[in-house]
Length: 493
Image 1: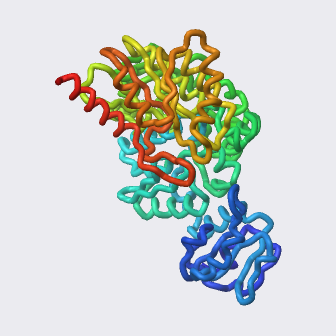
Image 2: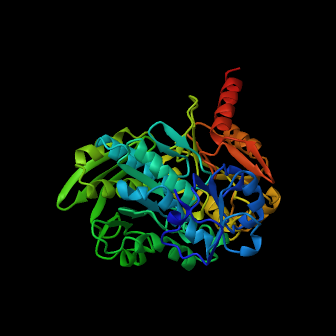
Image 3: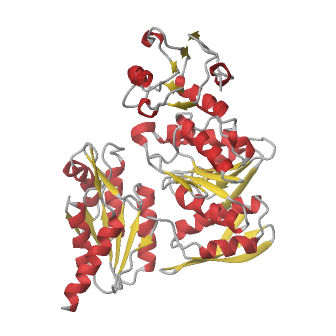
């Protein structure tokens, strides 16, 4: 595609060089530039893309999008724009021929539940016979094609490319997690969402957003984008404390779901056990039963949001319930580790105060004996949530093992020190501090007795641990299974 065509919708400050150049690809990472590509200089949180223009040119970049013409080099073609991050989604959408207009796009946002909800929606749509792609924390998948981007919501260039790939694979729907970072950083500016879903809003990412008001406003952008547009729909959790803001932003095309407050789609007669959750759905005077293998009240909310989306697409209740009954679970989301032991072990991604509280409350409901919790907090992230998580874990658990999560650039002991004031708020709290996460998991499993429940929280599906600049192999699920096997072997001797 010709450079000038890629710039449609953007008003460049200045074009230096040949605007009729043929562009064969686009990227913002100089290492991924190939001959004929357009390199887009993004000013990021940690580095500045302008510093890598020479590397991009050396790799074959035909042209550069930049904010600062001081980086211009003789003989190159550069288009100077006011904001390259805002320009990138337009350029990407133009390059991939506005792919989101050619299929139905469902966006799911919220602090917790995004991954599970997107997978539930995908399962229902596929049960209806609709080929469906997905983008999220675990992966981006369309047909047999799978990519891992490293972000819940990748950059706009990658999103647009993947939607085009999804179309080429025959997808009629794409379901995607939409993070607050993505909304604030304009990654989804040119995505034509048909349905947007709000799960909940609780404390997270305040290292970036600084306060809950800013965090909420970032999320609201998704709903402002579809407000009162014909054929568009917002689906809102009516029970969330921030629901009124999202309902107001959604405008007239809004469908609500809930348990405690009046909603368009309501769940009643809820029953939760270690085997799953069941409830009755009420919608427009009709009622039907739903049985899922997903555990916990938060799983009921996740299912309700997926049901709301499916109903809005005209899918019959029988198809919806049949699909939900077949979903075994989502990796790292209240995932049980069964090695034949006489106690239960669950691995969960919960890494926020609300997420931890949800899984521990569920644990209290379903365990017949003690609840043992292994948890830590991530480094280089919001420090204010650390004592909150400590207090929640101490209050809801019989015993806690406080350990390292993904410490990143911080010392694990310093992170644990931030957690401890919350632990100590709870009278008679019982805990051990074991910074080595592997040893912490071992201690919890060897401590467990018949009927106990061990919950290992924080990393869920992750197969790595981030320590300083290293990415270490580390999978809570495999390590837990290893120690269950070891314990069983010892007890048999």
